[in-house]
Image (cartoon, rainbow, N blue to C red; front, side, top):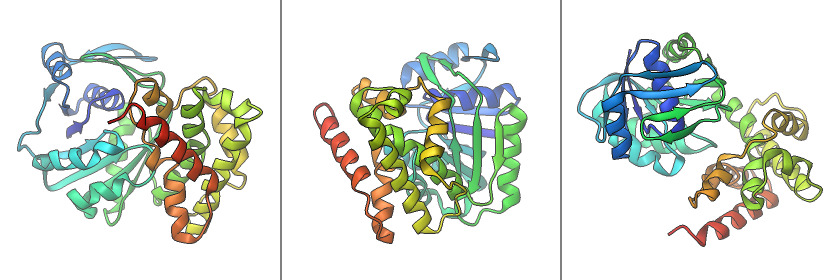
Length: 306
């Protein structure tokens, strides 16, 4: 399959490397000149539990007019509009577009650019990916990836993409209702993203803290209440137990929002904790905890983000 990965940061580099190692023709599109040069010169190196391998790959700064079968948008939420627009030369009549971001809401932005009928939404969990330098990424585990149609894309076309990822070594599966997966993940992310970022604490530290623990649990509960009010068919019956079970699996981890703050970057808080009050307002569910957490994060980010 001809695949273009738009946004070869940490996660994008993992996707591109693993899919290329599986024999697919992968084009890496990224705005970091040194990264693109290193990939073209030496290939894209990927370290992880399965080994340390370098795969030859073509990389470009600007997407060429060269339609592919699958476009993967692996950028942060703030960059999805630009990434989707930059990917238009790669899109032909039969191209499927897969967008993979944290939180909820980015796919709406992508749909407005590329069209709803070709769009898939991906939910990825717990890769622990990082860039070690130009042309060099590492990850901690090949964890779960779930796919679903954003709107009207046929189920067999979604399943075919999921099978490509499964054959490459991912734990991948097509879902009939991707919103369920998104909201079940958001309950966990709401519990830890803003609290960890604000306090500079790991997931486990927040989970067990006498002061932040109750805040974390309240944020998860609000997200669960909003999902239920929206009519999302989540299977979670106890949001606190659900969030704690997740936290126990990633006890020492730093959520992406905390990593962003440590690097002096704005986080994706608007589509994580910020999604809870946004959707809550639509169904009349009050979300004071998440609303307050978002305001605090934004006030903190204002001091270094211009």
